[in-house]
Length: 109
Image (cartoon, rainbow, N blue to C red; front, top):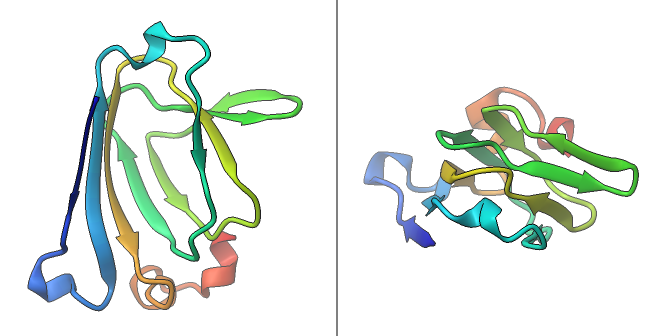
């Protein structure tokens, strides 16, 4: 598994908290592997260039789209890999969603 978190370029400072990527060719080899994403008050722009993960809910799991605007969470989000992972994302500052996405942040909760 490779995880890398980078500071944003200066032109995005103040709007983007960080850029990050996650890659793992063997992620789906462990059927019990699950990622818990905890609420952090940020909105993320996520692009899957590998196999999109599945969102695990009490009534089953649904595959995420290739591109996701991940809003502010009220509870932990459970994700399960469904193939080789390849994710590139930008974690916005909590106040930046309205400016970058031209929608109020609560539209993405």
